[in-house]
Length: 182
Image (cartoon, rainbow, N blue to C red; front, side, top):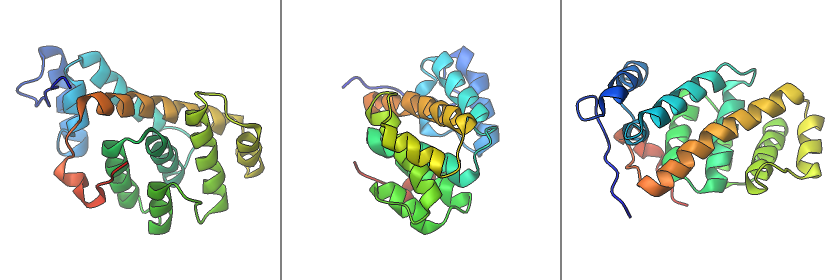
C-alpha cells in the first residue's frame, strides 16, 4: 500500500491550506479524512463542498445520517462508520437507530428503514436500485426530491469511502468511541 500523508495546516500543499483552515474552523480540528484528501486539494475541497450542500437538503438530521451510514456500511468504510456514528450521536439520533445502522440490520423506525434499504440498494447495484427498495421508499412517504438527495449523499460517501479504502485514513481520537470494523 502506498503511504498517504495526513496533512495539517502546516504540511498541506499551499492550495489546500485554506481548505484545512476552513475544516479547522468548522470542526474545531482537521479530521484525518480532510488531512488525507488535502494531498489533492481539489478532492478535499470537493468533499467539504458537497457535504455542505448535502447538509442543505430537505432530509432531517436522522435521515442524513441514515444515508451516510448506510452507504458507508455497504462500502465497509471503517473511518466513515466511526465518524458518522459520532455525528449521529451528536445530532441526537436515537441509539437504537445508530446501532442498527452500524450492524446493517432492520431499523426500529419503519420510515428510516425504508430509506436505509434504498441507500443500500443504490450502493450495491451501482445506481440501479431494486423496484422493491424504490417502492418501499416511496410508500414510506418520500418523494422524488428526497430520492435525488439520497443520490447526492451516496455520491459524497463514495468519494470519502473509496479514498479511505486506499489511504487507510487513521481514526481521529474524536471518533474512537464509535470505532467500527467491517
